[in-house]
Image 1 (cartoon, rainbow, N blue to C red):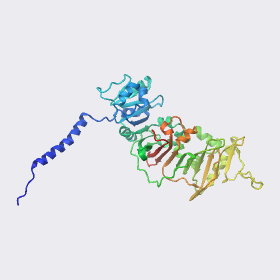
Image 2 (spheres, helix red, strand yellow; image 1 turned 90 degrees about the vertical axis):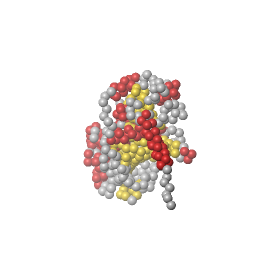
Image 3 (cartoon, rainbow, N blue to C red; image 1 turned 135 degrees about the vertical axis):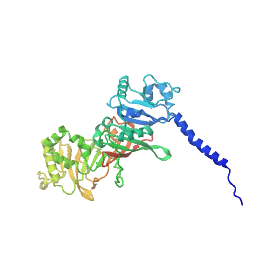
Image 4 (spheres, rainbow, N blue to C red; image 1 turned 180 degrees about the vertical axis):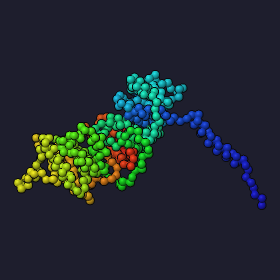
Length: 451
């Protein structure tokens, strides 16, 4: 039986259709390229803080658009937006934010005379002086972004993200900046987290950071650190824990203005400071419902089995505190047989002002499945409770904040964005690496479902 050969026409038709399907999008992209926000590469080095936002033209224009453009132009240009728009603060940290968006087609919208064109972007400055300064800075040659800055740039060009420089971190974090020295420059992608009925309940945070500017190389994969610890109780306004205090305090301890008083007034020379900063720690800020202080600060140190060097450190610290005019407070329960006022090297101690207000001290605490830990405190003494879990000897630097509760108590920097200050919980994990860059992850739990 003779085989029937298929007609070549269906095969040719299929090949033609396939070619058309491949060529048409390629030609369209070539004739009408998708905006890539290439101007961000020139703006990034001029920014202390730079953030991208998804455009939502079906909603009303954001306040920044109305401030920079006026109500009519803001509404007109906002309706043309697709993809992302940006705002940033200058590298000197002064002045208001700049508004940045993709330049619309010339036939679609006229731009204000104050607008500054930066490649494919439009920039609106907060004032004429800031516009002139930015124009001058953009006139100088700019190097190509590499390493951390290149990857941060890609995050800002493709999704909702935030970038900060050391200046930006200091401006925004204010008094919290010393706790974030390992992440002085970096960026985070922001991923909406939804709950039931697709309501926004928080933001997932993922990015990288470094302790210095302009770092090159790739961020190392995060090391396995075991299960995440439980979230601190509601009474804990802030908790920071990690394998060592040295990275947090090194920028302060290198200053002679700080090192000299530590040695002369409190007996903490370089050897004692290294002992103090070289062990795992847990720092906590607790709300106080009563007493002279609104909050108390506790520092737990996993000092290990050998407590002899710590006894010498505490003895020197005790003499320093007494020489500064403080008095050693009596023990909570004192009897005639236990009224020996001679210092005991491993005993608890607390210190008070002339009016009897206890302002700080230390105690040794039993720790679960570990050697006893040293607990130092400022403010009202913490209640004696159950044994504490020891700070982990390895793993990431973990920060928990309850921004809304801290803001209500007047303890949150007003410079932080409103979204952060109103959040119920902020968690950040900085995973250490062999190199200068570290992976940064976390989450922001919103107090309401509104952004």
